[in-house]
Image 1 (cartoon, rainbow, N blue to C red):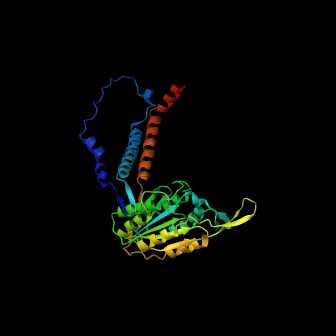
Image 2 (cartoon, helix red, strand yellow):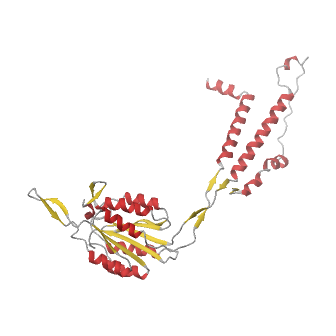
Length: 341
């Protein structure tokens, strides 16, 4: 369907006629005549009929340029077919730990050893892609918690900003309580009402920073109906080199506070998951895919494409053409060349 965004601009179409009708014409200059014995000396002048013919087509081109300019000012637009967007009514926040301990290389991805954050980015990106219809937000936390992306339907932006994050961006320590509190605040500030509000919190340590205790923050989340799914990430054992040159097995997740994470999930009605390797982490996110959305009517919009630049460009080209023709007729180009020389 074609429409004009500013249809009232079409009312200026007869403006040149009104100007010609009501604006006083320029005063004619009386020129003195010269008597000559014959008309032979004027044989090189352009005859009257050819001049009238030139003025006639130039007038019509001018009218066409004016009509195209008015058409462009009315902003013609094409409205496409309605596109439906499924909306689940679910607010889903992701909180990802960027503390220094996430640098431990105890995960495998594509046959090579990677740190915990790299594995998290790969798996969480696929999870975000599958969250069609959810409003997704991203919180990055370390010593402090930051809202990287507010709740949005733009999953691609959330993915990009997650992939651009790096270890130590928010500090070396871990503020789990502050991350939960920030999620509570952002969800509580939303204008729309929804019964399904979820926080997926991923960490590999214990609360060692921040102003709010994790369990206190969990109680605040429970009051607004925010369900928290906690993920403790990190392998149970890892082979490292000893000081004597040999190999020894260590537990890289010794600092993981599973007890607090389990209690957070219990208070808010969520679940605790333990991700010891990449495959387990992928399975956890697949389980999270089964969170039932709140059904709502699908929202729709019609894409609008502007076409004002086509008549505007055509009007400009006609105007330039008329200007050049006027210069050629009056010898303007010759005078310009002489001035340049």
